[in-house]
Length: 246
Image 1 (cartoon, helix red, strand yellow):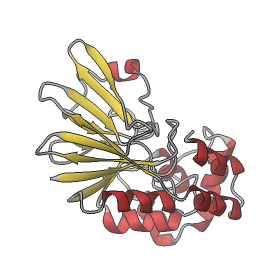
Image 2 (image 1 turned 135 degrees about the vertical axis):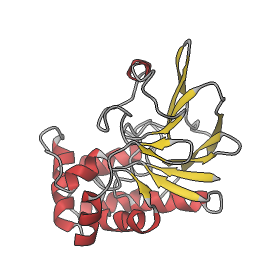
Image 3 (image 1 turned 90 degrees about the vertical axis):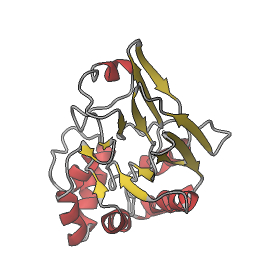
């Protein structure tokens, strides 16, 4: 089976539509690793799509914040303003759905999905040292995580942790073959707000028969997403960063 892996959509409808177009016909099941809302100006459209089409979804920290389930004290000013605005505009059915999302990890067929870390849903896995501490705590050999907005991931073997790169800037996709004797944590990247220097929407497709992850990048109408953010009077930094992939 081919699994479309989406994460960190962040209310960016243009990014989501571009990812779905690029993945069309290449997947059998879709999962979402959290943070459907927050930052962007289309929380209802994105939440409705995920709610109606992706039964296997875990919550992210922005999902919790926008649903009023988490304290905004630790959010920066722009993230806090976005969460408060999202709370005001979310339709009741989308708010109810956000509040009911499960905490990861969520175990599926041969792999698990989560937002931050298998040990803490809000933890960032950015460096090899962050991943080394997970040795002995991984319930499945394959884990899909988000939260960092950095496409790639980590390969865990007896001799240490190795970083897995994402898609090079000059390419549309890159493949990674999963070896049977290893543990991997795969980050598909962010659909709606990449932070790895590449502004294109990011996602991945996992073929569990071939045991291959194909990382993808898809260009989208960044200017349209930026215009919506500004029209909503959200902090301008949330629009500017989309062009930079930061």
